[in-house]
Image 1 (cartoon, rainbow, N blue to C red):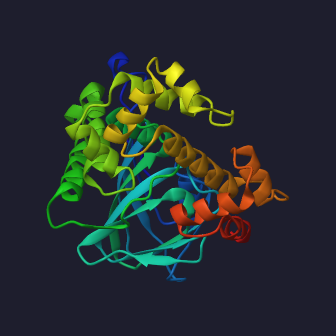
Image 2: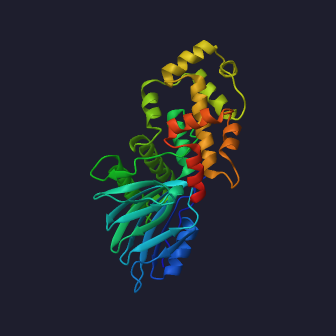
Image 3: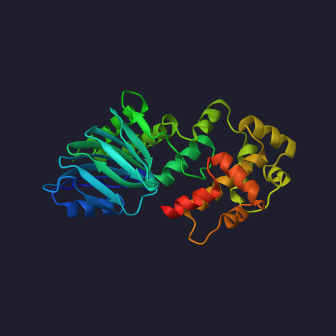
Length: 338
């Protein structure tokens, strides 16, 4: 096994410590220990019981990890503790199949790859003779980037279109930048002594991931591109997020945003396509869904609904189903099953 030297910290790189590592394994347990320490806790299996090999070259820059990997024997990963992040994987040879906690499975398309929420992943299988490129993004860093670009605080997991095409476009460009980063961090290559440049390239990948790959916050990007959000609307949204579990009236929100209730209503309709109270209700429904997905045993739908400001259980269930396409009790049962 070989590990490449790590570059020194650059104070201009916002406290980040970019580093590169190159490893070759023919021992399954060593590969498992390495991946569990550097990626997430997992178990490694092999499709071919007679042999095992795994090679990887990775660059970590803040909350983003760029890697090229290969395995002639093939590789099976069983994830014990999913990471809070998102992954973009492209098999340049062989195939990739990912299983989720919901019992679903998805396979990489021809000349394309997969984007997945890492929290949903249960297993990954790389066929024998596979080589793949991957960009893994920390959830917190990606969410902060979405907020920066949209003026829209992220209060739930992002849902991306799961398949992407490598026949040109944003995905192709992202992996070209990823390859440049990996090549630039080999040994004494230029990026090894220029961490600030590396951070700039990482930021470009983050921006492409948010702006060019379709997801359920894309509409906010489109809206921001045409109409910058007024300050009083931003104040209102910040106030809502800070007081989601408190009883709020329109007058309270207007006072916090330093404008009249009528002006706030008009601004929300123009810049958010809804009313302030409907916007607040959507935030609370998202919060309730997030809690239903992660709540401890013994929690009831009624408990969650009441905590998020929905006193009428039937109305909560109706609005929840209209927004998310399933009842709150279904969300809770599915989470407990997982």
